[in-house]
Amino acid sequence: MNSPRPINASESSRVASRAPSSPAFTLIELLTVIAIIGILAAILIPVVSSVRDSARASRCIANLRDLTLALNLYLNENDNRIHVHSASGDGSEDLPHWASRLQNDGFLDDREITVCPSEHPYSWGDIMEASPGRQNFRVYGMNMIVSSPPLGGSRDYEDAGSNVGPGFQLNANAVRDPSRYFTFVDSVMPGAYDPYNTPGNGSQRYQIRGWQPGGLDAIQTRHNNRANMAFLDGSVRAMGPGDLRDIGFLGYVDAKMNTVVMRN
Image 1 (cartoon, rainbow, N blue to C red):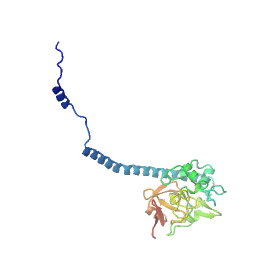
Image 2: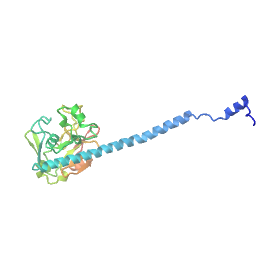
Image 3: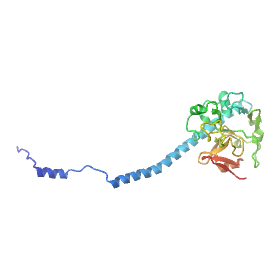
Image 4: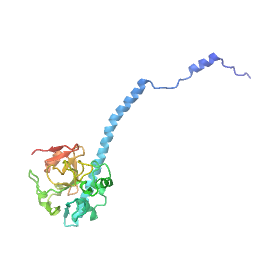
């Protein structure tokens, strides 16, 4: 048997030179990869944000549908009337706000559904901690209008709503068209005076008292320039400026806290 021939230095050098070199990125390749990642991020981030906003809007609609169901159950057992809006707003008086009244009487189990996920991307527990004693101000706006639309139309709001003592009373028996009588809506406190809402202006407001934005309450189009609005018949609609105008509103507050007045 022949023994292996030893490899001399020159042959070893030639073998080493033929060995594949380890791969490495050039500067151009690295910059190309970075550019591709940047393009993908620019495409995906708005898509992810849009999907998140759509999910929050859908959850808001579900909240409003559940709230109107709770309200109608309450009305069915109370002669189609509900008396809400206490003087202090902390739910400690005989006339608690609508959310506390529904909860106290067993028609609302989960206070989380009183909070729009787009307005407050945190839990009801966070609101309780941030605004002790004033948490009932920071919920969806309930219809507390006691006048007909300024440009004419249905008298349901004037006939069904009334101020009684320190509070507001809804008499659903007087509503002739439940599909046009709103119950709850995306709301906001737009004014500079904000003694109740912590951490400050921009919080939800528990009431809507007029057909145009006021210092204490207004409808807010926070879902892609639309406000989710529930009606007494149980329907929930995403209302754009034109839709709000059609049922009588003369203004609203947009997602950037700008007050928008719609002309007659």
